[in-house]
Image: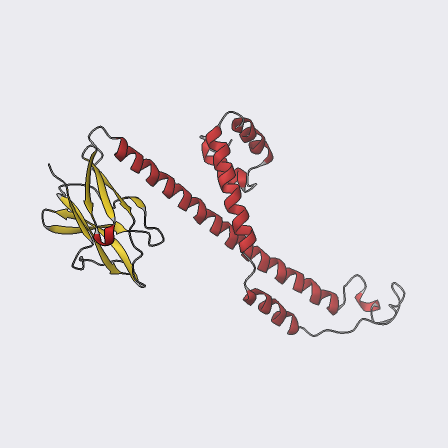
Length: 253
């Protein structure tokens, strides 16, 4: 196979992008690899959702029709003259009439338009695969922090009855924040996390506004942080925290 590691071919296999011999070899690998079978199912489901939701942009259809309209069309003769005869076709033996050329051009334009859509769909699928990969990598990092031998949990009450906790690991040099019953932020606002570096607040990521229960790997390393905070900020986040904070959690030594 082209890739040294067959685990890297799950996406290409799901999109039918492998040469026949490599596809056969990868299928043999699938028989013994549950991880790859799961990834193929995920990639196939993602590709199916993309294919069902993507339609050629209306501008493509308009551009094709406008280009066709620019070409003059001549009506075909009622009865074509005998082959090689002196009629209008005679001097043009072996050539197609302009009407046929018109529709050939139309077909080429449509093919080019659909080719552009195919490239667009491929890019959408690539981005979806990258998102899945990033989510999986973050989940692995969260698991490493939670399972670290030196992991410590620090909890505190947040505003509006919500609860927050942070799991820190000096060996991993990372922190995981969890929240439950967090109320949805007002329109145009977002929750932002901060590390407290002995009084200096350092941005540590934004929370997903669609869920009141969160478990996220905080952006950046733990370093010398003595605590963390969560604030309500304009969409996109801020460079400095807006007071008062939604909650503060200390990291006791």
